[in-house]
Length: 55
Image (cartoon, rainbow, N blue to C red; front, side, top):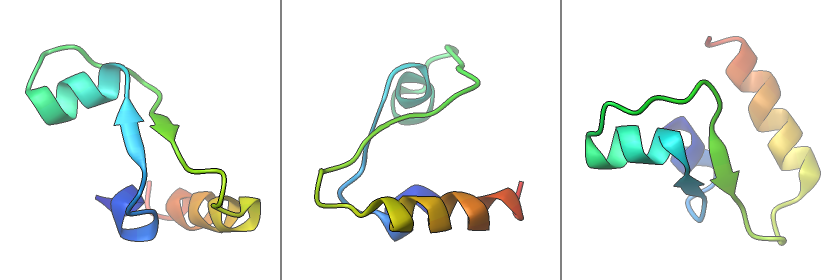
């Protein structure tokens, strides 16, 4: 939910999407995310820096 609060237009795909959205037992250590080109890199950097403190 963290990513959708900051980037409502984000699309999660790959193993994490299969696990979280479809209830599969497939798990991935990374998170694959599509973001529109209109999202500024500084917003992504700020999001990742804030996320580090929560993990």
